[in-house]
View (cartoon, rainbow over the protein chains, first blue to last red):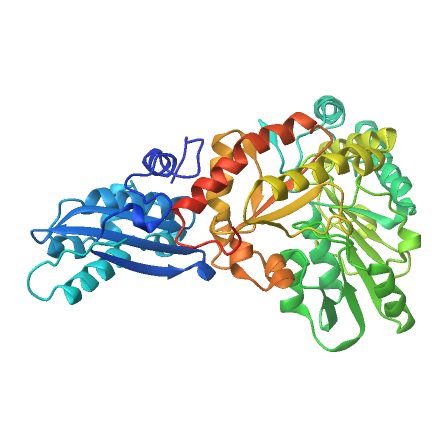
Length: 142
Length: 357
């Protein structure tokens, strides 16, 4: 799969791992978000949280946190790029395969354990909708 | 590059490269053949056998060359197929997995305990075990892969019936190992169909590899490497341990510094995952290994760390630094220039809140 490369993952995975986009550095209070979703378990080796800021039914901005391996970090970073600006309906349709395609395919054994971020995103959207049955409600987190 | 993965494998020693290169031209002949080149090749094989026998205080006739530690381990377990086989949870997979498949309830039993573990370096009390084993008429095996060159080995004092060795952990080539089989104990060959190794292991001799093993053994004996490990390497290992604990919040040691091989340090970093640490270190030219599941292609983290700590998070967040003869103070310095930053960054993007601050 990675013949000819000197690294275990593809260049784009490496790029996202070395320079992850949109991560929440430090405390959650650093980002003004409307809802947060979570997936995974540190016992299994991977956990992700997605923090979304919603405006006009779209993901205006988002941040994430990950405890996990390089492909978990890279795949969550990739998802954050894919999801930004999407409507909530579009965002929840982002699949593991979409992330995998974006990253130029992770090693097979990594697919199931490390591409989980889209589930955290769907969880965040679901929570947002539960909190905002009609119109988006502004929620300031401290 | 700062190489700190010697417990996985070590680079070939210059004298090993030289010996193998010469052997490719001079000792290529089939060592079982009666012609002169074959006979000369066999002499070189016997040289290696004598060196290993001398180093571990065994008879040359008690040494069988194999393809490596896994084959040596498998061979012993297969000899006891259908018998009771007792092992520790810290053993290598080549013991645990084969014992799972082949053990039964026949007597006598085989007890297989490594003298020191490869992931955390911890010593197991095999002297107490072998005493009890022999009192009951059972047999004792030990995987000494990590011990060779690191400590002096007296196979008679250890009172073992079988012991496993590998060339590539002491600067020899991958693909060569040895099995000590005490004269007179049960033995079943693993590879059948050849008179090599007194019918104890078929297949044409890996002469060039065995010559490489010999050169590594000679280096080990000439330099008394166990003394270097006990002094210089132990100092480096302990220094890294102290600095990690002192400078990295959320760090803990999985290695007991007072009861372990002097070259292995296993540490965990709370809220930071092992494969990510390993690969960020790799990007800085620092080579280590991890007990995290992610790195192995397995779903479960290190069985050794799980057995020792019972805590999957600790296992997933673990890094093993294993030192070799070439490491210096500068290597420890280089690690500590980058590791604290890597851990801090991973902890800051982690979903896990650190308990200790």
